[in-house]
Length: 135
Image 1: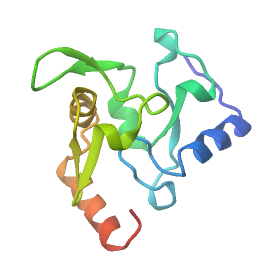
Image 2: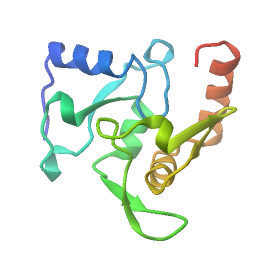
Image 3: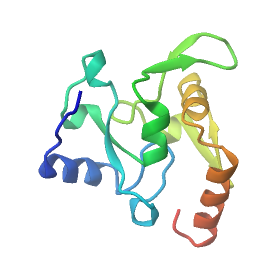
């Protein structure tokens, strides 16, 4: 199902995200592709297209997340919801240690794993951004 997001709503999502991916923190200005409004709760699961359910996501985070709303915590094997950018605070679920995004909670662990936030190429990219003072 294709959902049309108006330019006005897209601008609002970009502003509320501070022009960066709300999952991996990649600034939109340095991304190869424009970031995308992501339905935190996908439409197919009853999610709505409004600012309370839209987060700005880079291409990789949005593709890895797909229609998922949760995953199994690698530590406890319990089903846990993904990090929710509109209801939760990034710093309470993750900590940036060097270039690595360290999960602090079960939601953080499943999000880091499912979105592959610490894959080698993403770590290298994040390190370059840190060195260039862009992150």
